[in-house]
Each structure stands twice: as C-alpha cells, then as structure tokens.
Length: 163
Image (cartoon, rainbow, N blue to C red; front, side):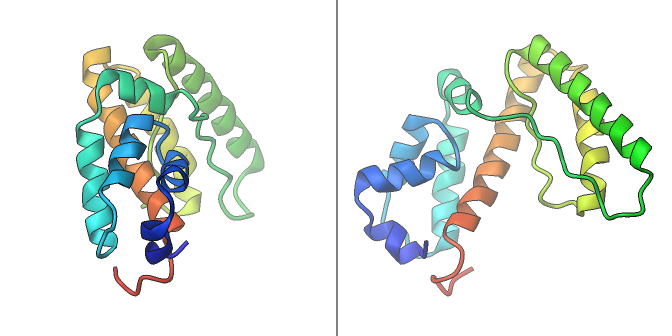
C-alpha cells in the first residue's frame, strides 16, 4: 500500500494495518493518529517514538501474538544434518527463553544474509538467556521496534517515491 493510501485510509483500517506490524493497540492508535505523514522517514520517526514510549503492558500485548523465529536454511549445499541440528538447538533455546522470560524470543535478522540467519538467531538467544528480566526487557523492545520498522516499510513499499 503506498504511503498516500495509508495516509488516506480510515482510522480503523490504518490501525488494523499497523497492528500487523506491532500488535500493541495503543502503539497502532498513536501511529495512526499522527497521519498524514509527508514521507517514509516521518512515518518511521513516529513509529520509533511510539515504540520508545511503550509501557510494559504495551510491550506484553505486542509480544503475545509473535511466533518464534525459525530462519529457513541457507542455500542448498549446506550440511543438511548440521542445519537440522541447529534448528533443533534453536527450538530448545526458544523454549528455554520463553520459560525464563514468559514471552517469545525476538530478533530482527533483516541485516543478515539468509545463510547467516540461523547462526545469528541461535547465538542471540543463547546470549540473551543469560540476562535477567530487567536487562532483557529493553533488548526485546528494541528487536520488536526493528521488526516493526521492517514490516511497516514492506507495508508502504512502492508508491511514495520517497525513501
């Protein structure tokens, strides 16, 4: 959906679209209420500000529908057994993370090549399992913000002419 159509959408439709990016109703309402946005940068700035202002309850609401990240295997030719073992380890680490923190593990892997994502996710979850909940909360909030940015950029891709 081009940015102009997003800007012109009824409030309920804009909020519903935003909820696909981040499932906090307060966050979505706030970003929708600031329309119209002159360009994607302004939209992303509003997204960032709304993310930074999320309460613990907003964050919990946003995390609830998220599903565990299980990156797809890289290009063919990788050791299939090694990939299966890494996926098994990642699923176990996800379960340990959810047990420890009470919500799904989130990490934004947009900056990595597909064949690096599995290793990055596994390294990230293993590192973050060592955190206490107070250390982890801002990290998961930042990963949620990064994921929401990517989702929103894909949502309004093409049609604004702006970066």
